[in-house]
Amino acid sequence: MPILSAGVSYRRAPVELLERLSFSNEEFGKAYHHLTSLEGVHGGVILSTCNRVEVVAEVESYHAGFQALRSFLSESREIPVEELGEPLVSRYEEDAVRHLFEVASGIDSMVVGEPQILAQVREASKRSDQEGAATPLVGALVRRAVRTGRRARAETEIDANPAAMVEAGAELAERALGSLQGRRLLVVGAGTMAELAVRSLAARGVREVVVLNRSPSRAERLALRTGAVAGSLADLPRALAGADLAVTVTGATGLVVEASAVRSALGGRGGSPLFFLDLAVPRDVDPDVGALDGVTLVDIDDLRAIVNGASDDEVERVRAIVDEEVSRFAEWRRAARLAPVIQALYDRAEGVRRAELDRVQARLASLSKDERAAVDAATEAIVKKLLHGPVVRAKELSEDDAELRLLARLFGLEPPPAQ
Image (cartoon, rainbow, N blue to C red; front, side, top):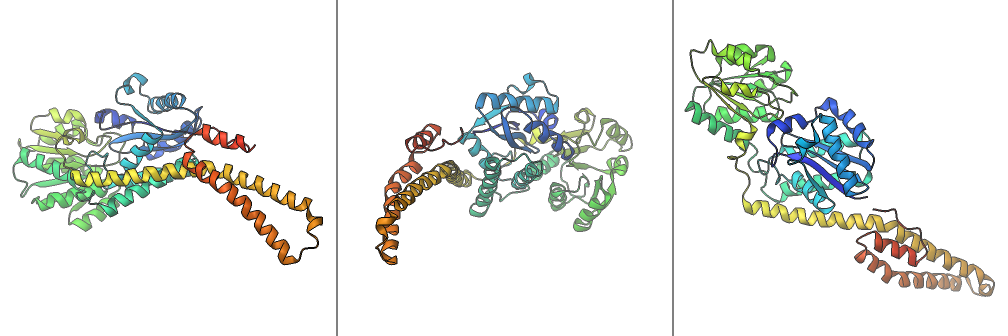
């Protein structure tokens, strides 16, 4: 069966659409049930990250598969099909394989080489397996994508700048606030990016750091590692009133910082400016916050034009690895489709050989045990040598269904299932 991918990424979609398309952890079970129930879709994996929502699936055909995946995204996220029209990109067969390998390698990310995407691809693969949605082909594809991503990071310097987005946001904060020396920092969230934000901004001289999280225990662990003060989201109004710079990077599905809360906090600040760096998708901060007097709001969309990724040379080195792995996957796929036909061919030939030996068994009765073994070995060698050439050529030429079916027809074998 063919491979088809369809989805939306930061390249053609605003953050507002990406956040509406994104799946929370609690929604994947229902989503996979929906996906695998679609006619013409045999299984797949859903990749939902800050910068993309894409489905890679094994389908019966391109047109039926595309219609099914487009409907899946539209219905699952309650977004009109027309709204997906321009941002939605589909890729078929080798293009789909190459794209997934590039994603896992980090060269299709908004920040080239960002490290999180490989773990996200791995987690998407695990979830697809758990939900019973990964066909053998899809499972093999995603595993090889992960291998490609690992090779890219082991053999190149593609992920040399994991904090590029935080650094870009910090530079914008300095433009808005002046020096960050002595500024008070509020971080909402306690994951990897939150820790990067704390350490990066501390290096720029922030004086006080408060970390808030829905789970206070996670905030406390981050605070212990970084010398910050921990709290829960219930402390947000007071923390906003005392902060100069706020970084938000949670996994919440809805807004965490409402415009009304910020408006209230501004009343006790005496007119001092407040800078928000929203690194989350979906967004944590109400977009209306940016319209308040004295407030600057920067989100993922604002960072796209200024982030710096890996050098062009490193990207080209990764592309060479991707090319190699795409070719290897194509070879594996052809071999996997050809293997049953070749095995059936050898089984058929061996059956003929054994039947002929059995038919003349009486004439061989006068032969010694060693002589009979020699006859058996000779006839077996003849069969293997006769089949060796056709099998080698079949492996070289077997690019599509027509060639495999012709091979099966020539030898009277069961044709392989349609791709």
